Image 1 (spheres, rainbow, N blue to C red):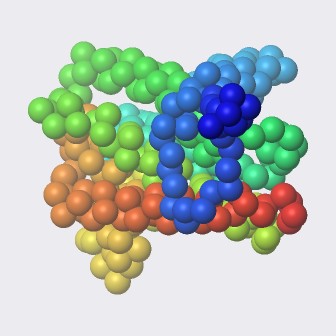
Image 2: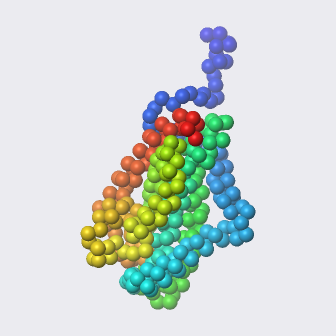
Length: 289
């Protein structure tokens, strides 16, 4: 082999067409970890950059939503939350739900909102939706801190709330929620490149999904009052995550082992399907966006 041939073959990086239908390529994502951090910083800084209240919106939204739900669903509609204060009950569900919706809506237009940069420079495209899921962890952390503050307040007020040993598994629930949001977001973002209607339906669909995800009521209430519609909640993996959250943090409701296994399996399927569709779409999306 000549010196020239040896020089031509010793590249630091080699970009080739992706032939594999399924490729998560974690090694390449790790190589671009600095870019991932830059995208995370961009997502955190730019959202409220030109707002007056800035990150305070992270606090205002769940607090006012919890107050509204408490007035409408607990006071007017008469939904009971057992020994748990209704406001804290709602805040627990909304805090976790907000993380899912932020991941889903943030990743649902990945190709459309990043078409400019995707068309100019190469990097693993999956870094963008992953960065959205990671950056939303900061938002979740702030909102969860507010939940802890109210938890401590109600605890010293004598409310019948307590943690249990399963609270140690709470981070796993959040990871599960993030992965589910990422998988669904990748599927929707791929569909949006061809069918723009999905971008208009996502906000409406998320609102409807919230009401069948046991965010503002216990799952047992549906079985007791509307058994003919219990299947809407029973087969919804989000409902099991939110119900398990309240069981771990407030010691109310029940924790379904079968429900969590079902949620874990379905989340894995959605995530794998999302990667398959995302990898296929990224090869040709620039022609349709």
